[in-house]
Each structure stands twice: as C-alpha cells, then as structure tokens.
Image (tube, rainbow, N blue to C red; front, side, top):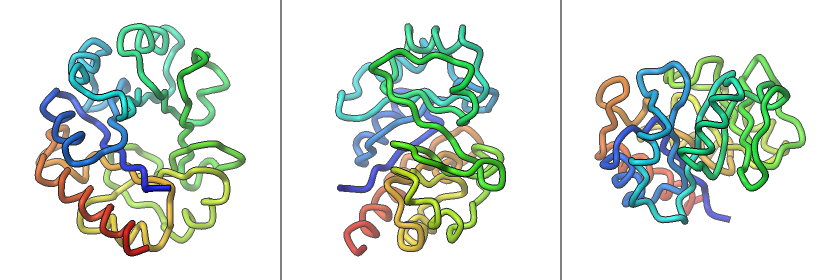
Length: 197
C-alpha cells in the first residue's frame, strides 16, 4: 500500500490545486481556532475543482455538534478529524470516515482503523518522539504528524514506517501561508523515502 500524504491547513483553491498536482492523497481544512481557520463555505469553494480521488478532511478540535453538522452539510467532507475523546460527544454521519487524533504524552493509540499521532498542540511545528511513535504503529493505520517538513519527512518515514504523513506549518512561508514549492518538495521527499523503504 502506498504512503498516504495529507497537506493540512489549506485555505484557497490555489493551495488545493498545488497539493493535488504534487500528488497529495488528502487535503485538510481547519475548523478550529487557528490562523488557518476557514468557514465551511470557504473550504467547499476551495475544493470545487478537486477530483474525488483526493480525500477532503475536516480538521476540528473539541467541536460542538452544531459545527460538525454545519461542516458536514456545507463542506461535505470525506473525513472528520478531531481529538479521540471528542468522538464520545459528537455524532458523525455514516459514510463520513473518522480519524481520531492521539497526542503524545496525553492519549495512547489503541485498536483504530486510521488515526493521527502528533504532539500536544496542532500546527505548532513540534516534532513527536519518532521512536515512541514507531511503537504505536501496530494500533492501526498511523498518520504521523507534528513538525514534519521537506527536510525531515524522509527520515521520519524511515524511522517510524507510518501509514501516512501529515504536514501543515512545515510547508508554509509564514503562519497560514502555504508555499507551493515546499508542498512539492515535501511530497517528492516523502515519495522518494517510500520507494527506498
């Protein structure tokens, strides 16, 4: 199975097009407090030309049910991603995949289909302990996040052997501003590491 690459924190159609052209498998839109936050309508508009082969991910943190409902109705994501404990308090419709987030030092992954593993604060550029992350790959399809960038993603893949990788701040020229060259460089490095694994 090929490595899943997710580019997160996108805000514009140009960003989405750059990610898709570079070979991303998933694009993430943030609906939580962040410089990358978008509205459901903005996310939908940004994805208007995106082929259905690329997954649309709604990224949240402690969302109220009303926000989940609005995002599902307006944006129509393929996936809802939020902290694992949030799924005890919200309802996600059948047909929408769920990706729980496990945070190093706070929650331990267990028996998941697909999940994210990252640090305490999303989008902060903080790298998790890759050896600890490696020990959790048996819990399911781990998407490694936190502090990844074009210059370290290959090593992270070599050490952790994740199902996928997720990047946001590591492909930006400024907080919330995606750098299309860095998006391409990140995916090139990830694919090269995958082929050499």
